[in-house]
Image (cartoon, rainbow, N blue to C red; front, top):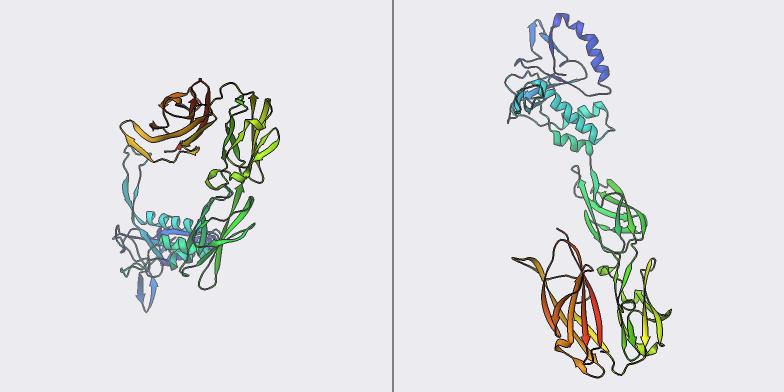
Length: 466
């Protein structure tokens, strides 16, 4: 309330109905009224044999009303024009505030406004913050918090002035809030999870914080916890409990879902439709991806190679002799599993009788390794780049070890047309990149003196997020 009326004591009885109304309303709401801007003591008295109050200032002095005076700008003392009173001006707040722009004014600049009519809503606003912080508080409890947490002033005409931060903290009490992860979040199983909490101790001292899962029990302790164990798949209620030195506790909880993303596998060798002579080795090579596994990669033991449904081994790379296969068509199958989910890929190959001159029987890429590109990265006038180091070797049954121009390097980017990178057993290629995900297929082709060729390909992936 920003209005006020001074009623002579002799007719103060006329205010009683209003006072009864404010007293009743105060049971369910916090009423704030401006003390006035007359530089007066609202409790001033006249005395003759006995003393009596000169004027009853309503609603400032009404029962159930917080009467608010004003403190000067950048000061803890009373503003010069603010009314005051040791009995009925309960609390002080800023007398001058910056307001605007005023939509009804032609000007657009903010401006300073002064008066206890601005001090009163300031206190009412803090009362609203207190009620928002703890909706269970009664109006009386909110008033008590505003008064008990207020600052003291060196000005003997200022009983106290508002302390918004302390009032809200008092309303909140001791609290612990789980800040990370958010409730309802999902995380990948098998990977570390970082738990973060904020503790408001309310003067109770430093608490011990314990973290638990409804599925897996104790997870650890500390306001911040990096959990590197294995969380069960499914929904968890994660609870953080703070225990203070006096034995009191507060807690917070979130719902966290641990998901098991299915793995994916890719056969990088042999290519679908490839042909081999019986005297050649067949390179079986694969990549795998699983966000729930260390390094985002399935362990070798979780991969299974089959030829025509006959198991031949568990790993990412192995070689089988073509002579163990009959002449004709065969299906090579790769299956990867994380124990719950799995993925399979197949290619079809053909085994032919040996020709007079066999193609190269061993072709190996020793660099780059298959998988993620991890740098080092550098920058020059052309942009960001990394050096792709190429190294490989090949052998031919008739020619022996192949070198020089017999070894040809090509590379395709994101499935595009292969581009020549040169020849020889080793090369270094400066490779510029841009934001996003880039897939490189690096192929080494070995050619013998009869013109027969054998190729092997490594798949690399680079992801850049700015």
